[in-house]
Length: 261
Image (cartoon, rainbow, N blue to C red):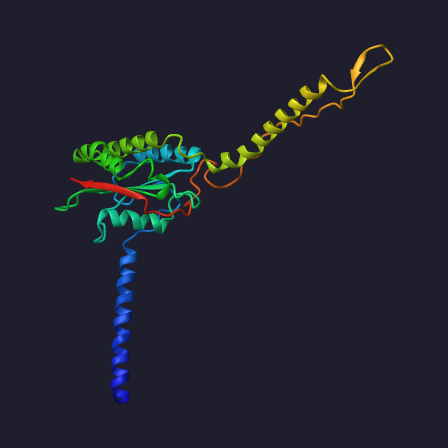
């Protein structure tokens, strides 16, 4: 093969590679970036009123602050050719939903009816939530709590019912990371106090005694010092302070289920 032919085939191969890369770039653009400032309700399809959005955001933010579990609501008019399940998992992975150490994030994805296309909904969870919200339970939420409202075009009612069902199911599963970090030193102090009390009780009855100048019997036991219990300062930033601090770096892929109407 002469040099001209080698250059020809190399150029053809290069064009194929560039074409595939361009297709990959177009597919990546199908997954939107999260809204800024960061929020838990990303209503790209405009399904909720301002009041409804604020109500859902407040509920999800309060749950995130108290448990560190992130439940995202995302609405889109087009799934970009992806199945709803694939789109939800890709979105959760791209956004890093949930805490990195726990993968305790979930995505409630809604694609409403647009023209002749069917409406679709899917709940995707991270690995950390899969034990409580497995595929079967996620499917029941979509079928029983969401679609009946969506058929009536009450998207707020369906999403609100789904959130309530998920929170009820996850109740007590996770504790906020701030509380976990603060809880350790408090428990250590309590244990220290219990140990000191036991030492005091043990030795107070059998310690060496002497008679003081007033004729009273006293134990030769040094006084015990109980350090004051003081609550640590809460960490600044993060998810507190009245606003959502952003994505947690978690990964998706735990499971999920969906439906259409």
